[in-house]
Image (cartoon, rainbow, N blue to C red):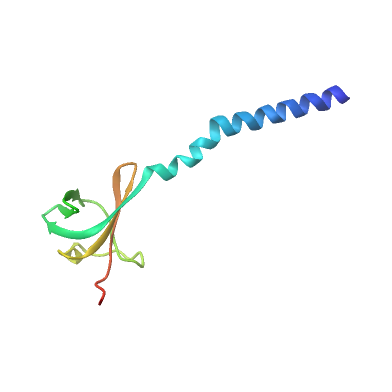
Length: 102
């Protein structure tokens, strides 16, 4: 009976070790796949915006406000503050901030 208990403990420890070595790192890798670019719209073309001297194509990308409401393309204008969210290096959402008085 005692040998059986030791065997069970050994396999439990082995299972936990394998879990933390093989499976757990995958849970942490999701944070590396999400990226955000924040800035001011410098220029607008028919299918892209320029933020921080980089062109970002917004075709098919949802435009949202800070309340997560959909916005029309007409809300894009030079000088607006935006956050461009990437998932797996693809633009998933563009958040357009309201003009604020300073």
